[in-house]
Every structure is written in structure tokens, then in C-alpha cells.
Image 1 (cartoon, helix red, strand yellow):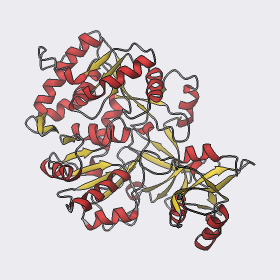
Image 2 (cartoon, helix red, strand yellow; image 1 turned 90 degrees about the vertical axis):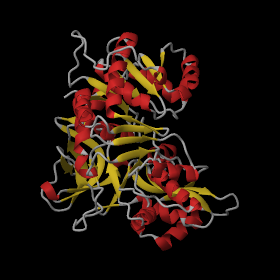
Image 3 (spheres, helix red, strand yellow; image 1 turned 120 degrees about the horizontal axis):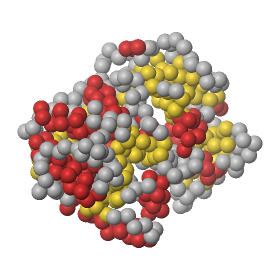
Length: 508
């Protein structure tokens, strides 16, 4: 089924219900349906057939309408991170072979500067100024450009956490499945209102906070930058009951609640993407009776590989583990690449068969075919992550453990870096720290600790190691301590192990 057909099925059942809320105004599914149709005609005339449109945008209603309209004319949407460096944006545009750049009004000047500096002559499309009021409210595709469900309509960039980022290509069919396989995890109903402070350019946010609500008859509440008490009042006034974001964003929300002496009201669930929420932060939400569900995913599978249930089951034997998603199969592999059979606890390299798996990597790089074969083998997506499986069938549970290259196994046990990091951070005179896995000068894996000292600290590597020897088992002791000016972080605020490894490999 085409993504717009799926949308129309939902819209026709919910014509009077709000599809999104922005700046205090709600737009119904009936109005959204008409806007998409008009824009489809407008873009067909102005952009031509099958455009490749890079979205350099903040979260806004025009992003939703333009995405569906562009998919109607067999175009491809390419979300760009609006906060990425100009160099990264330029590389993104060139690799994706974009033909146009869609912008929201607040980013139009910045986009022009970036394009001018790179001597790129891509036309800008100021999507908030595009309405197509003169066109019909029911779009019909031209006979010579009929879309098919296998057409690529979305290019998402992988994180590049352990290797060069790649552009992942997805079709109507894959996006449609992503929007349906999450229903049981969210227990969604049409009164749900989804909100995130994350940019929709991140695959987790695009799928969970934009695509999923709109293709299931719920309401998207769009952030417009409020802070403090105004932000908390905004959540209440907008009747938000589903929050989605990174661990760092939820920590800031808790600080805001504490500062303003206000509680979160009416929240049914919190969905965390991009990392693990700290145990003490989860405990606060638990006291508020707000369930916290972590989602595990990769761009290569539309950020839908497994998820904790948003309605916890008190009888679940493994409450901290994730449930499988509809239509997916899971297996873990041993060091020889063979499947570890059985239903008992088993740990290995995770592979998944999923309808959300990318078609291929796209772009201009010469290594794309090799890179695609590295992750797609037959019908299986090889994630490069380690995971623990428990049970099978309906009792199957999944615990993602992290990237294989970021982990180290000692005497059959996978050592947790966050555990060591917590001890490092507890040392007086340490401003920030991270334990990470790196390569020694001999090419062997070893644990190291990166430390940012306080300005007045007299700590040495030997004094830190002496402290750790009192607190940690020998298997968890870093081989060396290295000092640095800052700890690189990922989107979730967790240590960026790839950058740390790149900085210090071979120096230990």
C-alpha cells in the first residue's frame, strides 16, 4: 500500500479529529488531507516529477504536508539535521544527490549561506509559503508517473557511530510497516497526543513522533521552543500524553519540574530513544506513575527493532527486556557466525529479519555495494550489535547490549562501560569521565578511562587507578587512564565511543 493510501484510510475515519496542533491551533485530518492534495499538484508543477528534496527544517506542519505531497509525485524526502555543521550538510547534500532544498522560514538564510559557500546552485523551496490553494482537494497521479509501493520515498542517514555514515533508502511498504508494528507497544488510541523536542530529522523521531501518530489517527503536538513554566503549561494545555525523546531531554524536563515546582500531568508513557535513561531518573518517573519505555533501533531498520511495552506487565519475568515487534524474527550468532539455538538465555551478535529493513545504501560513494552486503545477508539484517535473548515465540525477550566494537568480553562476561564510568565520575576532582574499549599498540582490545580533571585537581593516572582498584573487580579495571579536555557525546548525551576509540587507539 502507498503511504498516502494508508494516510487517506486513517484520515477518512477521523475527518474531524486533530491531526496536529501548532502554536495553539489544531488542524483536522480533513484539512490535512486537502492540504496534501493541493501541495501534490503544486509540487508536481513546480518541482517536476521524482524530485530529490533535502529537508533543512525545524519541526513544523509544512514538513508533514510536504513529505506526503512529495511522496505522491514519486519524490524522495531527505531529512537533514538543521544543527549539523555546514561541512556535514554539504556532504549530505552531495551524497544524496538532492535536486532541491526545502526550508522552514527560520532556516532560509542559513541554507542560502551554506549553499553559496559550497557553490551549490540547488533551488530553495520555502515550504511554509507553499499552499496551492488554487488546486483541487483530491489528488490524482498522472498516468505516466504512477507510484508503486516499492518506490524509494525516504533517505535517512545512519549515525556513523562506528563507521562512515550511509544513506538508507526506504519505500512506501517499509514505512507503512514501521507505522503498524509499533501499535501493540504503544497501545495507541485516537485520543493520544505525541510530543517530542527532538528534531524530526533523527530517524527515531521521524518514525515514532511523526509517521506513527499520523498514520494511526493520533495527534502530533509540535514543539515551538517554550521553556520553563511556559513549557510545562504548554504540555497541559495541549493535552500531551505521550512524550518521546533522549535521556538528556527527559533529565532537563525533570529539572524544569523541580525548578518550577510543577508536576507532569496526564502523561501515559515516555519513550526513550538513542540511549539508556539513568536508573535514578527512571525512579523519579516511576514515582510519578509514568511508565518509561526504551526503544532499540537502527537507521537501517527505521528505528523499529524492539521496544519495552508502554504498559508494564507486573507478571513479566523479564521487565527490563524488550518485546519483539510484529513481523520480525530475531537470532544471535556465536563467534563463528552460527546461530545459537534454543530458548534459554543466549548472548551473541544480533541479526533480525524485518519488513522495515532498508532497500540498500544510496549515494555516490564507491563502497556502497560492499557496505550493503555487510549488513544485508539474504533476508537478515546484521546489526553489528550484541544482544541477549530469553525465551522464544510469544515469550521472546531482547536485551540490546551495545555495538560489538564498543564491548569487551572477559571470561565469558560482557563488561559494562557505564558501570565503570559511574565509578570514574564519583572521584573527587573529576569533572567528567568515560570508560571505553580501545585497541592497544599490539591491536588487542582493552578498557581505558578518559578523564576530564577539574581545574584545581592534582589527580594523576596512578591515583585514579589506585582508587578504581578498591572499587572494581579486576576484570573491570581500565588498562590505562588518559586525560582529555572534553568527553565527546552522542545525541543522547552518552559517551561517543567511536570518537574516543579513534582518539586514543594505539596509545595505550
